Image (tube, rainbow over all chains, first blue to last red):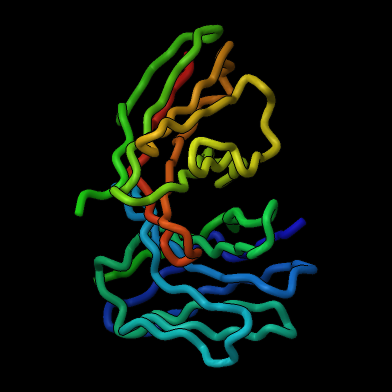
Length: 116
Length: 112
């Protein structure tokens, strides 16, 4: 079974600054994807970024980038130039590519507050 | 194109009743998954349907069931509701590749 751990329940950052959200996971699978999802008060889960485990290059999407350390099973999200609209819960998620395990396993989430 | 639509947005039911939640996926998406979100347990996988067949099931009691219709719309049913079933139920659809998960805004179920 897969587990995803987000040990920080809350974080706060000043607008325009950079913040890093941590995530570790455990799996015996060799082929998998990792995701960061954002859930604002509107409740809808929004995909922020994804990383294929077979790719060594870290994924980047505009102000969002990840630091993927496969050996350490670590997958952190860096948000640069934080904006007020980044205030939300952020979830790290894992998905194996093999049949029965092809479901999203989420961490507990972290509440990020961006201060003006 | 339209996103994933979940109805109703809010629902209040009494303990012992049953409830049916609906999810309309993005047009062309054949896979629909359901997740339960609670403050205590976080996000937990309920089941996934693909082309009207249940492909994967989470660790929930048999009171939780679902189905998918030929137009890919999905319903989930919870029978004999318990207070602990109060949660946000999220539906997600995808075409086929892992990066295609799109979530709906959820149905907030309150059991009293």
